Length: 126
Image 1 (spheres, rainbow, N blue to C red):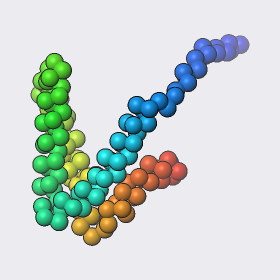
Image 2 (spheres, rainbow, N blue to C red):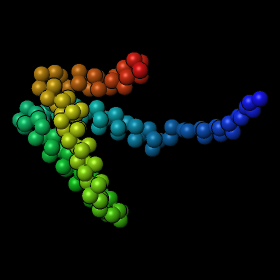
Image 3 (cartoon, rainbow, N blue to C red):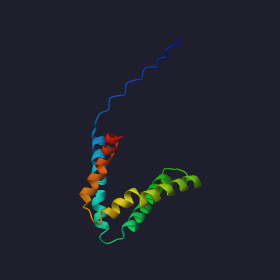
């Protein structure tokens, strides 16, 4: 005879509240992330698309590295550098790179909408 084993009860998640700092952070994410595609559209009018992204990624990485070093974090290992380089190349050659190339012909609002609804489509068709 098989004995049925029941899982321990899962504790309820604590109730989260939308405090002012949380709402401000959400608003900043919406504005910064939403304006990214407009910024790309403006930048590629005068700069080569993938070159502009390369400079953008390098500056963002330098700012993040500086912030972490100021907080006392150690420098990345060779393995971490390699993994970060692989992700950066995939972003530059794939995701963000292809969106940037597409924005030469499409409007920034169309690009933003396609990116915004892609997780929904992935969830619906999965």
